[in-house]
Length: 473
Image (cartoon, rainbow, N blue to C red; front, top):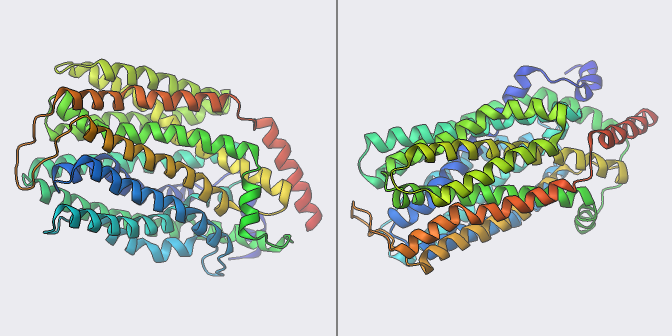
């Protein structure tokens, strides 16, 4: 790589299309695996492995808590990684991709164990799987501010990222619909689906590594030239991160948004089958309506945010989603047209939940750099995801145990017919698909209203950073 590239490209405002495309591909693998897990893992535990809903929710909670705990440590380590050939982030993707795929696949096997044997099998595999998910996903997300420092270009970059993310979700749902239609055995369905998704995920991560390498190394060359203060101890970095007021707003907004997304995603399969009385093969179609709309709307919201700002875009999307959640709560069997209308409206909101919080966090990192003189993307992204996952762990635990408390009946291993659910269990499903996400979304709207970093404030931050860099040179 020549010196001119190192001097200029890391700070230019526009990114090449092929770089944006390769960066977006990095979220395809985590998105496919995460969405398959969100949509189907709880259902797989109760309806295939025959694990009671409460225990199934506990498995997911343990995995998410562990996933949250290891995020800040991986983030801290990526900030400290030094590689002339790959930079700080890319080695983690390069060496973690294959183990990430293998342990995701192992979650979809049903060994011939007792219920408690299965419980501990899925806990252990889930813990290892979550480690490798963090190993590839957290360094990837921390790359955003290293690829561009332009306020609006970051929103564009995240549009590419979430095009692949939502596209991966849609692809996984299309694959699931094909597999569910072709294979009748419920257990084999998930094994085949997991195998196909594993291969796609690993290949996409390697595309990201090789497609962004030049840009990442250009940034690294520029960053190394600048004189940085001595690195602070990890506990001190934690303290500084949580005294950054805008950062607290961003993690709150993200937590609320994704609680809404993932609670809805985990309960929709139950809602479609038990409340709307449709077939399991119809679940992916409903999900595609949501995710397809979210994908189409990404670039619309991205362009609109350049004109009216991120806050207004977030408000518009969330309001539509809240209306959709209310509609889903009152839907009755046979109202299929209304169901798909509500799914499409929810997709408008899901799109902003993907886009807006992730385009805010790089601005927070620059404010921290102005205040401390250090770039600590790994720490900020790590703690953002940590708190989000703690909330998700509680949400999944709540959904699973609420279903069990309301009398939900899990399937018996080996039986093809699903059990009939009591009215109390149907009520729990309706509460989880409507009122519960609505509370989370309203809380996110309140936090967004008070979020302090505007386009003007970010421009001032960048001007001061540029002045500091010019002095350092």
